Image (cartoon, rainbow, N blue to C red; front, side, top):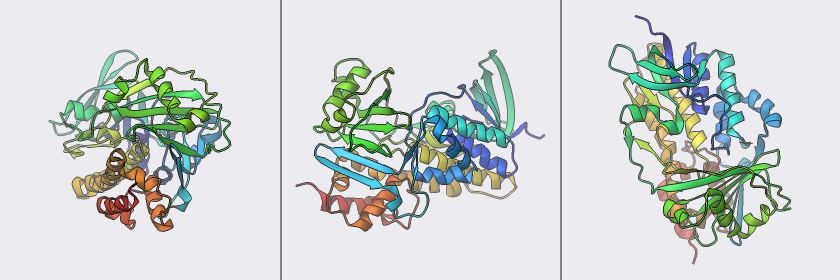
Length: 414
Protein backbone atom coordinates (compact mmCIF):
# COMPACT_ATOMS: atom_id res chain seq x y z
CA UNK A 1 0.00 0.00 0.00
CA UNK A 2 1.54 3.30 -1.06
CA UNK A 3 1.96 6.11 1.44
CA UNK A 4 0.11 9.40 1.15
CA UNK A 5 3.45 11.24 1.02
CA UNK A 6 7.09 10.30 0.63
CA UNK A 7 8.07 12.36 3.66
CA UNK A 8 6.29 14.38 6.33
CA UNK A 9 8.38 17.26 7.69
CA UNK A 10 7.29 18.78 10.99
CA UNK A 11 8.09 22.49 10.90
CA UNK A 12 8.72 24.98 8.08
CA UNK A 13 11.67 26.81 9.63
CA UNK A 14 15.14 26.80 8.07
CA UNK A 15 15.87 23.09 8.56
CA UNK A 16 12.41 22.05 7.37
CA UNK A 17 12.41 24.33 4.33
CA UNK A 18 15.91 23.34 3.25
CA UNK A 19 15.26 19.62 3.78
CA UNK A 20 12.08 19.94 1.71
CA UNK A 21 13.85 21.72 -1.14
CA UNK A 22 16.69 19.19 -1.21
CA UNK A 23 14.27 16.25 -1.26
CA UNK A 24 12.31 17.86 -4.10
CA UNK A 25 15.57 18.09 -6.06
CA UNK A 26 15.80 14.31 -5.67
CA UNK A 27 12.27 13.83 -7.01
CA UNK A 28 10.35 13.36 -3.76
CA UNK A 29 7.22 15.15 -2.57
CA UNK A 30 7.30 16.24 1.08
CA UNK A 31 4.35 17.41 3.12
CA UNK A 32 5.39 20.15 5.57
CA UNK A 33 3.19 20.73 8.62
CA UNK A 34 3.80 23.97 10.50
CA UNK A 35 1.95 25.01 13.66
CA UNK A 36 2.41 28.77 13.16
CA UNK A 37 1.32 31.07 10.38
CA UNK A 38 4.33 32.62 8.67
CA UNK A 39 5.72 35.19 9.11
CA UNK A 40 6.23 34.65 12.83
CA UNK A 41 8.85 35.80 15.34
CA UNK A 42 11.89 33.68 16.14
CA UNK A 43 15.32 34.33 17.62
CA UNK A 44 18.57 33.09 16.09
CA UNK A 45 19.00 36.17 13.92
CA UNK A 46 22.74 36.25 13.28
CA UNK A 47 23.59 33.74 10.56
CA UNK A 48 27.06 32.30 10.00
CA UNK A 49 28.77 32.12 6.59
CA UNK A 50 28.55 28.31 6.67
CA UNK A 51 24.75 28.76 6.39
CA UNK A 52 25.19 30.20 2.92
CA UNK A 53 26.59 26.88 1.71
CA UNK A 54 23.35 25.11 2.63
CA UNK A 55 21.10 27.90 1.34
CA UNK A 56 22.98 27.70 -1.94
CA UNK A 57 22.74 23.90 -2.01
CA UNK A 58 18.96 24.20 -1.65
CA UNK A 59 18.77 26.69 -4.55
CA UNK A 60 17.61 29.57 -2.35
CA UNK A 61 20.60 31.91 -2.32
CA UNK A 62 19.40 34.23 -5.08
CA UNK A 63 16.04 34.63 -3.32
CA UNK A 64 17.70 35.48 -0.01
CA UNK A 65 19.95 38.06 -1.67
CA UNK A 66 17.03 39.58 -3.57
CA UNK A 67 14.96 39.86 -0.37
CA UNK A 68 17.76 41.42 1.70
CA UNK A 69 17.08 45.14 1.01
CA UNK A 70 13.32 44.94 1.47
CA UNK A 71 13.46 42.69 4.54
CA UNK A 72 16.20 44.58 6.38
CA UNK A 73 18.77 41.79 6.15
CA UNK A 74 22.09 43.27 7.25
CA UNK A 75 25.28 42.27 5.44
CA UNK A 76 27.53 40.52 7.96
CA UNK A 77 31.27 40.02 7.56
CA UNK A 78 32.40 39.07 11.04
CA UNK A 79 32.06 39.20 14.81
CA UNK A 80 33.26 41.83 17.30
CA UNK A 81 33.91 41.19 21.00
CA UNK A 82 34.11 43.74 23.85
CA UNK A 83 35.08 43.19 27.46
CA UNK A 84 35.74 46.38 29.40
CA UNK A 85 38.86 47.90 27.85
CA UNK A 86 39.47 44.83 25.67
CA UNK A 87 38.29 44.71 22.06
CA UNK A 88 38.74 42.15 19.31
CA UNK A 89 37.14 41.46 15.95
CA UNK A 90 37.19 38.58 13.49
CA UNK A 91 36.74 39.21 9.77
CA UNK A 92 35.21 36.05 8.35
CA UNK A 93 36.86 36.35 4.95
CA UNK A 94 40.19 35.89 6.77
CA UNK A 95 39.15 32.42 7.96
CA UNK A 96 41.18 29.25 7.44
CA UNK A 97 38.42 27.18 5.78
CA UNK A 98 37.28 27.58 2.17
CA UNK A 99 33.71 28.70 1.47
CA UNK A 100 31.53 31.75 1.94
CA UNK A 101 33.03 34.48 4.08
CA UNK A 102 29.98 36.72 4.49
CA UNK A 103 26.34 36.26 5.38
CA UNK A 104 23.41 38.24 6.83
CA UNK A 105 21.86 39.26 10.11
CA UNK A 106 18.16 38.71 9.67
CA UNK A 107 14.81 39.12 11.27
CA UNK A 108 13.78 35.51 11.32
CA UNK A 109 10.12 36.22 10.60
CA UNK A 110 10.99 37.47 7.13
CA UNK A 111 14.00 35.20 6.56
CA UNK A 112 12.16 31.99 7.41
CA UNK A 113 9.26 33.01 5.18
CA UNK A 114 11.63 33.56 2.25
CA UNK A 115 13.00 30.03 2.65
CA UNK A 116 9.56 28.48 3.14
CA UNK A 117 8.16 30.32 0.12
CA UNK A 118 11.07 29.06 -1.99
CA UNK A 119 10.42 25.49 -0.83
CA UNK A 120 6.72 25.88 -1.69
CA UNK A 121 7.56 27.32 -5.10
CA UNK A 122 9.78 24.29 -5.73
CA UNK A 123 6.86 21.97 -4.98
CA UNK A 124 6.65 21.42 -1.22
CA UNK A 125 3.11 21.10 0.16
CA UNK A 126 3.29 23.43 3.19
CA UNK A 127 0.29 23.60 5.47
CA UNK A 128 0.39 26.29 8.10
CA UNK A 129 -1.54 26.27 11.38
CA UNK A 130 -1.35 22.49 11.61
CA UNK A 131 -0.45 21.20 15.07
CA UNK A 132 0.91 17.67 15.43
CA UNK A 133 -1.13 15.69 17.95
CA UNK A 134 0.12 12.16 17.30
CA UNK A 135 2.78 10.26 15.35
CA UNK A 136 2.41 6.49 15.18
CA UNK A 137 5.39 4.37 14.14
CA UNK A 138 3.76 1.06 15.09
CA UNK A 139 2.32 0.17 11.68
CA UNK A 140 3.81 -0.64 8.31
CA UNK A 141 4.18 3.08 7.63
CA UNK A 142 4.49 6.07 9.97
CA UNK A 143 1.18 7.89 10.44
CA UNK A 144 1.11 11.57 11.37
CA UNK A 145 -2.02 13.20 12.79
CA UNK A 146 -2.43 16.96 12.97
CA UNK A 147 -5.09 19.39 14.06
CA UNK A 148 -5.96 22.11 11.54
CA UNK A 149 -6.12 25.16 13.81
CA UNK A 150 -8.23 27.00 11.25
CA UNK A 151 -11.28 24.80 11.84
CA UNK A 152 -10.18 22.41 14.64
CA UNK A 153 -10.44 19.39 12.32
CA UNK A 154 -8.12 16.37 12.55
CA UNK A 155 -6.26 14.91 9.58
CA UNK A 156 -3.91 11.93 9.24
CA UNK A 157 -1.34 11.03 6.60
CA UNK A 158 0.88 8.01 6.07
CA UNK A 159 4.42 8.45 4.84
CA UNK A 160 7.68 6.62 4.38
CA UNK A 161 9.61 8.80 6.83
CA UNK A 162 9.20 11.71 9.27
CA UNK A 163 11.70 14.54 9.71
CA UNK A 164 11.19 16.58 12.87
CA UNK A 165 12.23 20.17 12.14
CA UNK A 166 10.03 21.65 14.86
CA UNK A 167 12.83 23.52 16.65
CA UNK A 168 12.23 24.35 20.30
CA UNK A 169 8.76 22.74 20.06
CA UNK A 170 10.64 19.39 19.93
CA UNK A 171 7.59 17.45 18.77
CA UNK A 172 9.00 13.93 18.43
CA UNK A 173 11.22 14.11 21.54
CA UNK A 174 8.08 14.94 23.53
CA UNK A 175 5.81 12.37 21.89
CA UNK A 176 8.38 9.55 21.85
CA UNK A 177 10.06 10.28 25.20
CA UNK A 178 13.42 10.98 23.56
CA UNK A 179 14.48 13.90 25.74
CA UNK A 180 17.69 13.61 27.71
CA UNK A 181 18.71 16.29 30.21
CA UNK A 182 21.35 18.66 28.91
CA UNK A 183 24.62 18.70 30.85
CA UNK A 184 24.71 22.49 30.54
CA UNK A 185 23.60 24.59 33.54
CA UNK A 186 20.21 26.26 33.31
CA UNK A 187 20.65 29.64 31.66
CA UNK A 188 18.18 32.32 30.67
CA UNK A 189 18.12 34.72 27.74
CA UNK A 190 16.26 38.04 27.90
CA UNK A 191 15.89 39.76 24.53
CA UNK A 192 14.04 42.41 22.56
CA UNK A 193 14.23 44.54 19.42
CA UNK A 194 15.12 48.21 19.67
CA UNK A 195 15.31 51.22 17.41
CA UNK A 196 19.03 51.45 18.04
CA UNK A 197 19.88 55.01 16.86
CA UNK A 198 23.56 54.09 17.04
CA UNK A 199 25.81 57.00 16.05
CA UNK A 200 29.12 55.72 17.48
CA UNK A 201 31.97 56.05 14.98
CA UNK A 202 33.53 52.83 16.28
CA UNK A 203 30.43 50.65 15.87
CA UNK A 204 30.47 48.28 12.89
CA UNK A 205 26.98 47.32 11.70
CA UNK A 206 28.49 44.60 9.52
CA UNK A 207 29.35 42.53 12.60
CA UNK A 208 27.49 41.04 15.51
CA UNK A 209 28.74 42.58 18.75
CA UNK A 210 29.27 40.23 21.70
CA UNK A 211 29.87 42.08 24.97
CA UNK A 212 31.08 40.40 28.16
CA UNK A 213 29.83 41.93 31.41
CA UNK A 214 32.77 43.79 32.99
CA UNK A 215 32.34 42.09 36.38
CA UNK A 216 30.86 38.70 35.45
CA UNK A 217 32.62 36.82 32.64
CA UNK A 218 29.76 34.32 32.33
CA UNK A 219 27.21 37.09 31.56
CA UNK A 220 27.19 38.29 27.97
CA UNK A 221 25.12 40.37 25.55
CA UNK A 222 24.37 40.18 21.87
CA UNK A 223 23.72 43.23 19.69
CA UNK A 224 22.66 42.24 16.18
CA UNK A 225 22.05 45.22 13.86
CA UNK A 226 19.62 45.06 10.96
CA UNK A 227 19.90 47.31 7.92
CA UNK A 228 16.90 49.49 8.79
CA UNK A 229 18.21 51.05 12.00
CA UNK A 230 16.86 48.41 14.32
CA UNK A 231 18.74 45.78 16.32
CA UNK A 232 18.17 42.61 18.26
CA UNK A 233 19.48 42.96 21.80
CA UNK A 234 19.77 40.23 24.41
CA UNK A 235 21.55 39.16 27.57
CA UNK A 236 22.39 35.60 28.65
CA UNK A 237 23.20 34.55 32.20
CA UNK A 238 22.30 31.93 34.77
CA UNK A 239 18.73 32.06 35.94
CA UNK A 240 19.98 32.65 39.49
CA UNK A 241 21.95 35.72 38.38
CA UNK A 242 19.05 37.22 36.44
CA UNK A 243 16.59 36.49 39.27
CA UNK A 244 18.80 38.73 41.41
CA UNK A 245 18.35 41.70 39.09
CA UNK A 246 15.22 43.67 40.03
CA UNK A 247 12.38 44.52 37.67
CA UNK A 248 10.57 43.11 34.69
CA UNK A 249 12.59 41.53 31.83
CA UNK A 250 13.03 44.85 29.98
CA UNK A 251 14.14 46.56 33.21
CA UNK A 252 16.69 43.82 33.86
CA UNK A 253 18.04 44.12 30.33
CA UNK A 254 18.40 47.90 30.46
CA UNK A 255 20.03 47.82 33.89
CA UNK A 256 22.60 45.25 32.78
CA UNK A 257 23.34 47.14 29.56
CA UNK A 258 24.06 50.21 31.70
CA UNK A 259 26.80 48.21 33.46
CA UNK A 260 28.77 47.94 30.19
CA UNK A 261 30.39 51.27 29.20
CA UNK A 262 30.77 50.69 25.45
CA UNK A 263 27.48 48.86 24.97
CA UNK A 264 25.56 51.54 26.88
CA UNK A 265 27.34 54.22 24.85
CA UNK A 266 26.31 52.58 21.58
CA UNK A 267 22.71 52.36 22.81
CA UNK A 268 22.56 55.72 24.58
CA UNK A 269 19.81 57.00 22.26
CA UNK A 270 18.06 53.67 21.69
CA UNK A 271 14.29 53.45 21.86
CA UNK A 272 13.21 50.31 23.71
CA UNK A 273 9.89 50.15 21.91
CA UNK A 274 9.24 46.38 21.99
CA UNK A 275 8.38 44.23 25.04
CA UNK A 276 11.22 41.98 26.19
CA UNK A 277 10.85 38.20 26.12
CA UNK A 278 12.80 35.49 27.85
CA UNK A 279 13.66 31.82 27.40
CA UNK A 280 14.86 29.69 30.30
CA UNK A 281 16.60 26.33 30.17
CA UNK A 282 16.90 26.33 26.38
CA UNK A 283 19.79 23.83 26.15
CA UNK A 284 18.47 20.41 25.09
CA UNK A 285 19.61 16.94 24.16
CA UNK A 286 18.08 13.62 23.10
CA UNK A 287 18.75 9.91 23.51
CA UNK A 288 19.14 9.49 19.75
CA UNK A 289 18.95 11.74 16.70
CA UNK A 290 17.14 9.08 14.67
CA UNK A 291 15.04 5.95 14.94
CA UNK A 292 12.98 3.63 12.76
CA UNK A 293 11.11 5.94 10.42
CA UNK A 294 12.30 9.32 11.73
CA UNK A 295 15.20 11.71 12.24
CA UNK A 296 15.53 14.90 14.28
CA UNK A 297 16.80 18.11 12.69
CA UNK A 298 18.32 21.18 14.34
CA UNK A 299 16.97 22.26 17.71
CA UNK A 300 14.52 19.35 17.77
CA UNK A 301 17.58 17.21 18.45
CA UNK A 302 20.18 19.22 20.32
CA UNK A 303 20.67 22.89 21.14
CA UNK A 304 23.77 24.14 22.92
CA UNK A 305 23.73 27.88 23.51
CA UNK A 306 23.24 31.08 21.49
CA UNK A 307 26.71 32.49 22.19
CA UNK A 308 28.28 31.69 18.79
CA UNK A 309 25.04 31.76 16.76
CA UNK A 310 25.49 28.10 15.86
CA UNK A 311 21.82 27.06 16.06
CA UNK A 312 20.73 27.84 12.49
CA UNK A 313 23.99 26.47 11.10
CA UNK A 314 23.49 23.15 12.91
CA UNK A 315 19.87 23.08 11.76
CA UNK A 316 20.82 23.58 8.11
CA UNK A 317 23.66 21.05 8.30
CA UNK A 318 21.26 18.49 9.76
CA UNK A 319 18.81 19.17 6.92
CA UNK A 320 21.53 18.64 4.32
CA UNK A 321 22.74 15.39 5.87
CA UNK A 322 19.22 14.06 6.43
CA UNK A 323 18.03 14.89 2.91
CA UNK A 324 21.02 13.09 1.42
CA UNK A 325 20.64 10.02 3.63
CA UNK A 326 16.86 9.85 3.20
CA UNK A 327 17.01 10.47 -0.53
CA UNK A 328 19.33 7.50 -0.93
CA UNK A 329 17.15 5.36 1.34
CA UNK A 330 13.97 6.17 -0.57
CA UNK A 331 15.71 5.26 -3.83
CA UNK A 332 16.35 1.77 -2.46
CA UNK A 333 19.93 2.20 -1.28
CA UNK A 334 20.99 0.73 2.06
CA UNK A 335 21.94 3.53 4.47
CA UNK A 336 23.21 3.72 8.02
CA UNK A 337 21.54 6.64 9.80
CA UNK A 338 24.06 6.54 12.63
CA UNK A 339 27.13 6.71 10.38
CA UNK A 340 25.63 8.76 7.55
CA UNK A 341 23.66 11.29 9.60
CA UNK A 342 24.09 11.27 13.39
CA UNK A 343 27.86 10.90 13.66
CA UNK A 344 28.78 13.50 11.00
CA UNK A 345 26.30 15.96 12.50
CA UNK A 346 27.51 15.31 16.04
CA UNK A 347 31.11 15.94 15.04
CA UNK A 348 30.38 19.60 14.34
CA UNK A 349 28.05 19.94 17.32
CA UNK A 350 30.80 18.60 19.57
CA UNK A 351 33.23 21.13 18.11
CA UNK A 352 30.84 23.95 18.95
CA UNK A 353 30.33 22.38 22.38
CA UNK A 354 34.07 22.63 23.11
CA UNK A 355 34.06 26.38 22.49
CA UNK A 356 30.77 27.02 24.32
CA UNK A 357 32.07 25.21 27.40
CA UNK A 358 35.34 27.14 27.24
CA UNK A 359 33.42 30.42 26.90
CA UNK A 360 31.53 29.85 30.15
CA UNK A 361 34.72 28.69 31.87
CA UNK A 362 36.29 32.00 30.81
CA UNK A 363 39.18 30.34 28.99
CA UNK A 364 37.93 31.10 25.47
CA UNK A 365 37.65 34.77 26.39
CA UNK A 366 41.38 34.58 27.19
CA UNK A 367 42.00 33.31 23.65
CA UNK A 368 39.73 35.85 21.95
CA UNK A 369 41.18 38.88 23.72
CA UNK A 370 44.83 37.79 23.67
CA UNK A 371 46.77 40.50 21.85
CA UNK A 372 49.47 38.31 20.28
CA UNK A 373 47.56 35.55 18.51
CA UNK A 374 49.49 34.28 15.47
CA UNK A 375 47.62 35.07 12.25
CA UNK A 376 47.32 31.38 11.35
CA UNK A 377 45.73 30.47 14.68
CA UNK A 378 43.39 33.45 14.52
CA UNK A 379 42.30 32.32 11.04
CA UNK A 380 41.59 28.82 12.34
CA UNK A 381 39.54 30.15 15.27
CA UNK A 382 37.80 32.52 12.85
CA UNK A 383 36.66 29.52 10.79
CA UNK A 384 34.85 28.06 13.79
CA UNK A 385 33.21 31.40 14.58
CA UNK A 386 32.11 31.47 10.91
CA UNK A 387 30.41 28.09 11.38
CA UNK A 388 32.90 25.79 9.67
CA UNK A 389 32.86 23.31 12.54
CA UNK A 390 32.95 20.29 10.21
CA UNK A 391 36.22 21.23 8.47
CA UNK A 392 38.59 18.59 9.86
CA UNK A 393 41.49 20.13 7.95
CA UNK A 394 41.36 22.75 10.69
CA UNK A 395 43.31 21.45 13.71
CA UNK A 396 41.03 23.43 16.03
CA UNK A 397 38.17 21.32 14.67
CA UNK A 398 39.98 18.01 14.31
CA UNK A 399 41.38 18.13 17.85
CA UNK A 400 39.22 20.88 19.26
CA UNK A 401 39.36 20.02 22.94
CA UNK A 402 43.11 19.31 23.16
CA UNK A 403 44.13 22.20 20.92
CA UNK A 404 41.93 24.74 22.68
CA UNK A 405 43.12 23.63 26.12
CA UNK A 406 46.75 24.16 25.12
CA UNK A 407 46.00 27.49 23.44
CA UNK A 408 44.00 28.74 26.41
CA UNK A 409 46.87 27.89 28.77
CA UNK A 410 49.22 29.99 26.63
CA UNK A 411 46.74 32.91 26.47
CA UNK A 412 45.71 32.74 30.13
CA UNK A 413 45.48 36.11 31.82
CA UNK A 414 47.99 36.63 34.60
